[in-house]
Length: 485
Image (tube, rainbow, N blue to C red; front, top):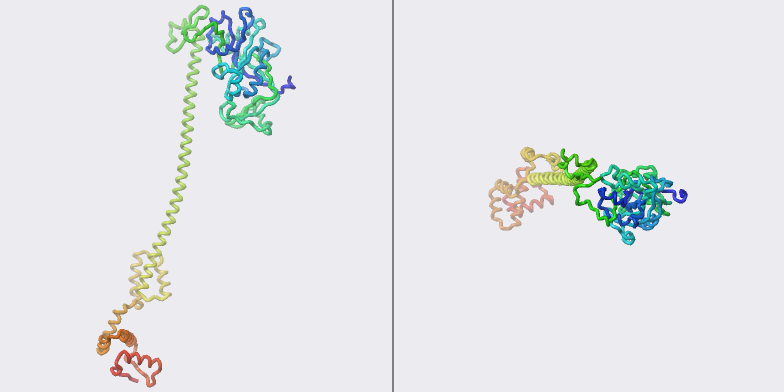
C-alpha cells in the first residue's frame, strides 16, 4: 500500500450518532436532523449492539486544517468508495470499531442532501456525508463516549471526532492569497515549479505560506482511494449536532428547561437567571455553556469591531494616499505654472526695457544729429537705466550736446532771412516762382553760412564759381551786389 500510495491525508469532522431511546430523552439534541438521512436504515430493536452514526466527512472545494483539499471531480469519483471501509480508533488500523455503509453529498452549512447530479455542478464548497455503524460489543466505552460527545450538557461534549484518510499518488499545488480557503479564485502552480514550492506545505513540515499574504496548499489527485475513518479525541468540525431518528419527533427548541435524570434544571439565557435561589436548580454544565456562549459572543463582537476598525484604518489610509498623490500632483503643476509665469515675467521685463531703450534712443535721434559713435556711447550709458536716472541724464546731455541739436528748418530760415539786406528780403517776398524762391532760399543759406563777410570773385572765374555766379544771377539782380577781387 505504501508503494501504491506515497501520500496520505486525513480530514476531521464531528460524528452524529443515532442514540438509543433510553439515552435519547436525556440529551440536549441539536437541530441538524438532515444528516440523519445518511444514517443506515437498520432495525435498532434487533440490532441493539450497533450505534448508527453519520457525519460530514469533508468539505469539497475548501482547504482543510492540514492544508489539503479535493475538488468536485475527485469527490464525484471517490465518494462511493467509502462504503464498506473500516472505522478504527486513532488511525490504528488493527483496532477496528465499525464500518461505513452509506455515502452521499450535502450542502455546506445546512446539511441539506444533494444528488450526485447537483453536486457535479457545484464549484463552491459542499460536503461528502457518510453513514455507518459502531460495534458496541467491540468497545462499549467508546460508543458511549461518542454518544456523550454530542450531548451539550456532558463534559465530553465535542470530545470525539472522525478523521478520514485518503491515499493518492500525485497532487497539484495551489496558491491562495489572503485568509480565504475556497478553491474558487486560487491559482495552480506550474509543474516545473512544484518541487521548489512543495517544501512550504504543512504536510511536509513547512509553514503553509510562501509570503506574508500568499498561502500554498495541496490538491490531491491521481489514484485517490479512501482508506477508512479513524475516531479521535481531536475535535475539529464546522458543523456540530446529534442526528436522531425523525420518527422520535424530539425537539428541544421550544423548551426552557431540560430534564436530566428525572431532575429539572434551568437553562440560563441571561445573567439575571443566575440568582441565589436558582443556583440549586442550575446544572454546572448550564453555567459552563452559558459562559462559553457569552465568551463566544464577546469574542465575535470584538472580532467584528476590530475588523471594522482595521477596515476603517485601511480606507482612511487609502484616502490619505489618494489625497497625498493628488497634493503632489498639484504641487508639481504649481511649480510648472510658476516657472512659466517667471519666464513670461522675464520676457515682459525684457520687452519693456527694450521698448524704453528704443524710445529713448528715438528721442535723442529726433533731437540731435548723432553719429554712429554717439549712438554707441548713448546706448551703453542708457542700458538698464532707471526712469529717474534717465531724466537727469537727459538734462545733462542737453547741455553737453547742444551743438548737435537739430534746427527746425522753417524757423532757422526765418532767423537767417532777418539778417539779409532789405532788398533781398523784398526780392524773396515778391517772388512768385516757387523754384526761384527755393533757389533764393538756398543761396541765402549758403551766403549766411559762409565765414567770409563778402563774396570774393577771382579775375578768372572757374566752372564752379561760374555756377555759383549763375545761381546768384538767377536769384537776384546781379547789379545789386558789389563783387571785389
